[in-house]
Length: 353
Image (cartoon, rainbow, N blue to C red; front, side):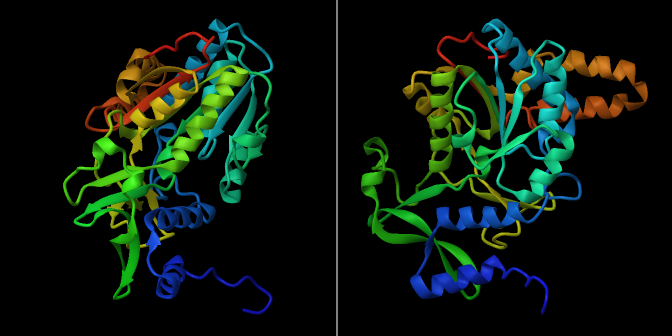
């Protein structure tokens, strides 16, 4: 097309050519490139998108996060300047709701978004016009306490998988056969990368790790240690170490084969909160706990807040209570989603843990 941009080549074609020329690629490479393409090209949120996150379900979610942050900041001594930092802030909805609630108690931080997608940055500015944008945490101010929130951010970071074969441990790779992508075991021995206590697992066992999540939490902990502050990491995952693949794909609110449409579906994996808590504690920060989202929100008063909103707007009462149930119901988001809290060593414990 003369005088215009050429359509981007499908990622599936790029992968197929790469694999044909150089052999299978790592699963981590496959997931990472897929999500870079996916998030750079669209707004994936909402009924018209591929998935809905908690802040889009109800304003109560963001409000309670804002109140939690205001409470711990006040009890820590109201130090200024203070920075609100959100990783992967979606449409900015959580920030808007959280800071509206926090402002009532005197917390008016500068706002910093860690967001790589220019599509999403434009949308976020319509919700939070004062936001400063960063590609990673390295350019966030190095002075003053930080209040860090990551809601459904860690799950999209690429995972590395090791599989036990009859020849030992191998990295899980992605091959292309008959025009389809399939997982295969690599050729390179990887036994040294497996903790000794787990090396004798049965053939077929898969160990999944997320180097990006580990690095992110390591850096967050370092910031809390140096600057003071607190962090909330909210995502679906587990609080005990487990075996097995949790890789999944979502498109138009439906699950599909994660190897079917690279770059066209949201690829995620469950967050290993047990490992992340140990990483944070290795730096000397306070691990406040990792608890189910439903329990945490109930402890913060979501049921009372829902009743109050329903009384104020009775015509919306059924929708308000349905949203509350979606956030805290054990068969919905209440049990699978976890909330992990971290704080600087000198900061108080946080509510709900």
